[in-house]
Length: 423
Image (tube, rainbow, N blue to C red; front, side):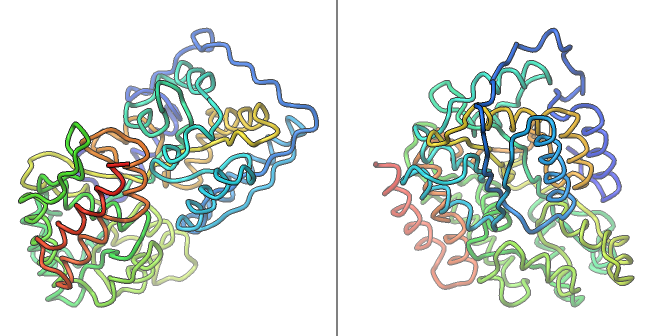
């Protein structure tokens, strides 16, 4: 994917949605006849409870609720939706899995499903039906939602992140286009700080924004949590180089980023405090849909760019994937599967994408720059636990802020990760 500005982002997103919610990169759909027959007769008297995340894009939540109402009207199945912040969904899902009680469906993040695969309903038939009908799933989506050759979740999509920046600030810093490499990006950040629009990147335990940029900066320099055999290798010269680069970046940051969670960079950007951060479409969405003339004017000055390429020489992006999980304790697994099928069909999925102006991208072509969490090893309990424990984010925060030397931060991350990978 080339670098693109806001209007190009929207054009591409609209095109994808109009072509196929789950179709292949070409947008071609398989015919109905080609789709595998799928039958999941809902249980009599079924009622469903769904737990999902909230907060960032109102169009997403409103259209999801509207589609849910359509499902109830079509099937007679009542559905209750509870919404929590990302940081709250993961522990509630873990508790539900352990005690065997809770929402029928939980929409989590990253590889949450791999923390308790045996507690989840096998949805292979549904995933096969959707894949056959809409052109197939990309491998990374399959990796997040399969375990031992069975589907344990359905990928809703991913909140594809970009670097979000003020175009006027970028030009004031001496750049006509957004830098494509990490060396140029550091110079841009230094220039933005000099012009009074410093960068701001989350270094608290931010599920989305902290993880995406911290994994990127480590991977871009050749660091990784584990090798292909799942040996922990985070304590490496490549990781130390990434941490030293992060320290240089941090010197340009607006104060306070060590405690930032996912909403903080949105607020700082929209308040005019920072000139660049990493985010999905939610910052632009908030500015564009605001009734405040100042924010509407800011929307015209917002650009989006792919994450710069580091010394490794290729894209190394992590994006926030949303697995939709049905728990075995549910009394109505067939009704739950039918709900997910209904929500993923193009009649509901496309309008939902459009209402959120692409905040969640379909789980196909948008993943092509993406590496899965746990790279370069297998996805499973250990990678999920290491992600949930924010090992990469904490390591970058420690080194960037100077609270620990880069080598010591990498050593501590190594020991923390080994606790999970030796289980």
